[in-house]
Image 1 (tube, rainbow, N blue to C red):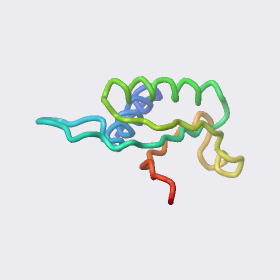
Image 2 (image 1 turned 180 degrees about the vertical axis):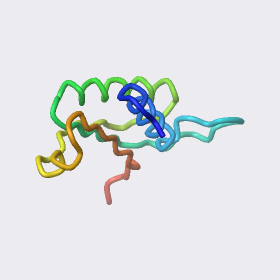
Image 3 (image 1 turned 135 degrees about the horizontal axis):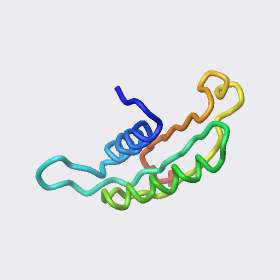
Length: 99
């Protein structure tokens, strides 16, 4: 259980870094596969930009390979259920286009 906005934000970023393969607890780490990231925010675009910047810094520090980061607002219907100040991160593998 994480309480408080600052701790929740740090936890969200840490989970995204782990999902991107950027952190190993012990031993040698296999090469990280490239990932694409999406940052979703509720009401304030500045919150989305700040999360994107913090996430990019954490990924570089952890050695994750990021192909792209997309930032977008949550749609109005989702915002009603998520509440004010909602933030989210999506980590997806980078797929090569079909030939």
